[in-house]
Figure 1: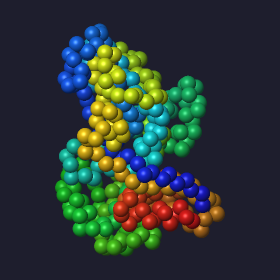
Figure 2: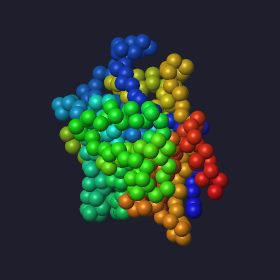
Figure 3: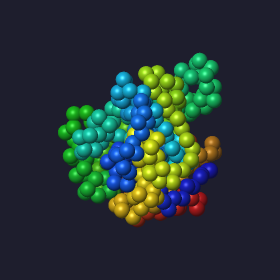
Figure 4: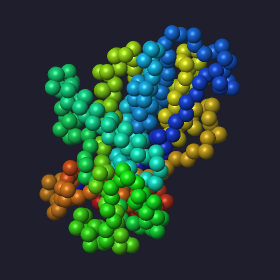
Length: 323
């Protein structure tokens, strides 16, 4: 068994946290600092899930009458931060109403990203993408969530009556039929068959390819800058607005140092490539697992396990790493 452990004392899982700032309204910039240009220029700080999602919506829903330029800034590149080590377990099983539209948009972007890569390979434009497509971007395996507390059960009860959600509750024996040997302490588990396991890096890279091919249409310009930014105020005079998609890293900007109520999430992500001579493979059609630790399965030999500091799951990944 081969594995790659990614320790992360500052693992940032607040990727979907962002702000939009219009320069004339900022207390540290005068109204005259806003650029007088004929097009709309906007930098997006961060090239993870949040950054590319914001860029997507800007390019798709911005005014067609106004030329739009979007610059993405990230010192380590696309999906090279916390988003890149995420296990990619995506599901709409939340009591929040907003997840209905979020889920549909996510699935649409997955389909578009994969289709754009296929077209690039077929046209001979990007033959290097053949590896990404063969490995695939997402796996419709579903997720199995064994309840480990009454809170888990109550959350799923709130979700039960959503029209757009399909899930099944089951007892321990039914859960073990899906994943042999699974621990189900409260004798109840929830199977989410429509949930996806996304390869985060391939997904975001393919989404970027779609941007690169299509942004030249309809007066759109998109550029990537792999460098750090000293402060928000450094963008004054050049851009109309700044979008910050840095998660908890936003606290490293001097304008927000010590004033944002953010905390980092400490945890360990273990990426394992199972060897061919193991005694048992993970069943081909068994779902991924979401519990104290999550286990994301890609094909039958690639497995990612993540656990957060402060719960029982962290000992699971530490034990695996020692082996």
